Image (cartoon, rainbow, N blue to C red):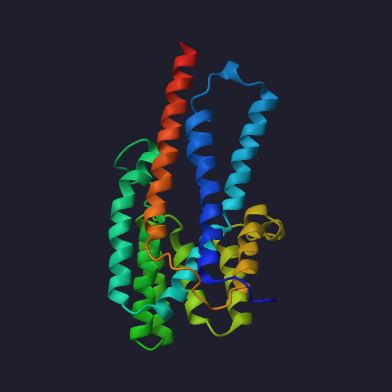
Length: 255
């Protein structure tokens, strides 16, 4: 496999698939499907709209493993781990009200917390593992505790994210183990332990992310240190206002 993708290119690819996913959820589903009058669409048109939303969610499965991989890479290359964790934490807090608005319509919701919290927790897990020189017992305990925290706090990605981040870090220099363990995590966290689970479209699309990751050339690429931190809440904010506008139009339609 030719190594032709830099870190910045990988990040841009992940962002594109993330935007597709959020467009389907915030604009198409929250903005149109949940507000459109029944008479607005024929059954066939509504089915097409629902299929489009599902398609957006399916493509969106590519983004998260890439972000987890880039976080692990960032851990190896950062000049200041404290600054890295602080930056993620600050932007997680800034993004949360916007994330809640986009997904629930409320400024505060405990339904689910944004992915930057998951990445922050994942970075803390790696820091602890590294501090104890990858001691097997401590590493396993740290991963389990991190996964449990992500679950009870309803972080976007749950234990799936913590497990993937840990795999990308622990098997960083062992490609076969890294990709095998990643696929296993994707399968287990899909919670469909059947043959059909191996051909589930969401699982297969997540696995596709590993193709892009395998093409990573180890180079940073263009400098975009804080671009993602700003882009993440920014695109959600735009989608929320688009969704809000569509909701108002559809409500007027029903009058």
